[in-house]
Image (cartoon, rainbow, N blue to C red; front, side, top):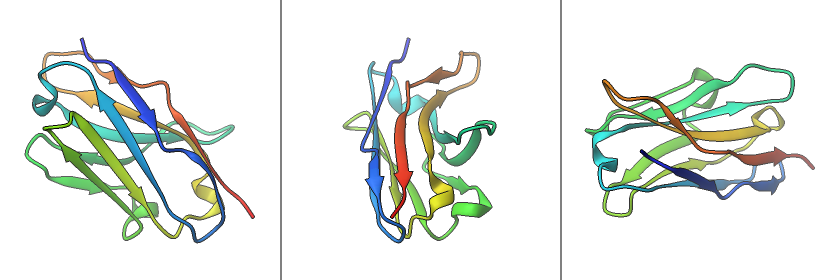
Length: 116
């Protein structure tokens, strides 16, 4: 099993920056594709960014050019660097780990609030 713990959320003004971290337990982190999802109040959970085992990335159109996902396999951690934050980025951000023939693992989330 994989346990995921997100951190780094908080209150930030529009135009500000935050870096989210997701620490994973276990010795097989490098074999998982990792993703950041978010869920705003009253909305469905959506994919924000993902990174494969090999380091390939993809992003939702709404965050391209503003968010960057990265991973450090030596630290069992995936990051989401967010710049130029907007009020519509306000949501609970969740980390996910996935690989073939295994279940999807989720963290409990970290709240990001963008407000003046």
